[in-house]
Image (cartoon, rainbow, N blue to C red; front, side, top):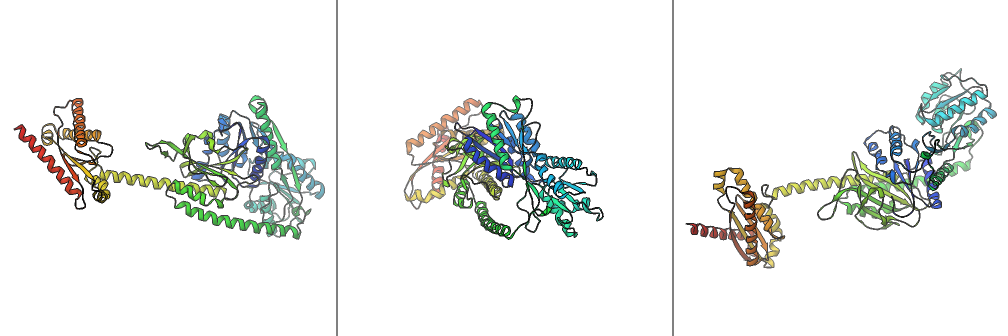
Length: 640
């Protein structure tokens, strides 16, 4: 886990900017300092109506998180709206967690939980409605069937109806929506379509559905609250100003988060947990009644509108500035060719992430290459490399430190004070590149652009990977065009590509060069007698011997057929002769090992040249060939 002696709590919440999330994050920041914990928030994206490739990768956060290493877990299952997310998360915690786990805003028989006591929270609203307004006909707009909060609120409503002796027709008096504005038309049809049978009041399971239904009532000439009282739940702050302000219930998210983390702290300190007990701990938090216009017991004055308008104007300015910043960040990031540019753009654009104190980016890797450079991958791995560090808004470079991802961050990221870190995985389509870790200044939480920023990072990493793949493919093709397939030595084109760019400089400096041409003996006889496979073996043997004998800075090429050339810069006669002896020794070793019916032998010619401005590479190669043929002719004459 995070280095140091401080314990680490992992928090699992979806999204990063709802009213609930913001309240929890602020509370965690404060409580982490009081209780001396590091907290890692494993945050994801996901909406009820969303089904795409991005969601599939987001779900992998649960297997990625080092659940076994955490000292405590805080989880808010009901923030995961996409089908299957909640089940996967709970399965991972059930199978892997060895520490105390406390669920937040979620009633569970399986986990210790701190939640809104839905029945207790809605009761003040119901008592106000029934005792003050005394309706005779009341109906209920529930959320989608199976929504746990909605079901609890509905059951409290049923109980209140029974206590007041009011009839309740389950088919006619209860309708189900989707917890959002757009269920207004269907809710109106189910609950208010008969003008001769309108209710006195409708209790809605949340404010969004209440607002959507209210719009439909007003559109049909039905007044609220004069004709029908509407109530909601949640005290949503971002309803449109032209909506009636709802009589509703405000949940105490801050008190809920405080209670949850303190209960988790108690269990960590005492060793208590759900696994040590037969029953779970369930702590219910009450809500607060908010009276307003939809029941006629509250009214907004001009000061309210002035405050809202000023706040909206400020927010619009901030959003516009951030949107411009994100747009230019997208442009800059899309132009990054490599990680160095990626790192520099993040540093240059740090003003576009106000409140962000530290940023660490870690990429998945598959070991390191021969030069010691990390090999980055597009798959989730146990090993990661820290490639970007901004600390206290300062550029701390690209450490390129490799470590086990269960640590989350290496020791260099450690701080003396407790940290609340936000972790997101960086991915696109089916590919996973790594993760980013954010640390904000005290009392700062992620903005609406938090996930937008992470998507930009993922897109830039995707572009870099694609560019590297194209470059690797190009390099592979280029190498194949300059390499002899059979011997893996340079071909003639490859030799020229290596030497010609430097040729004028070598000539200007009047460098001493040694050209050694090798010509295999009897290749035609080997092919004719033993077949072309034997001839191919002989050519490969020549290449292997030349490669094994050549100095590090030598250039060796197969010039065509059975001719080879080695070029040595600055070598004298002794160095050239020593090279030929090493070659002959290597070739003899291959002959002994293979025990073929024929020996592989070669003639060689050495040409020593002091370059000048008038000398060409082609001329030097020709001189070397001539020397080799002289040696070959002399050997033939001796044999006769």
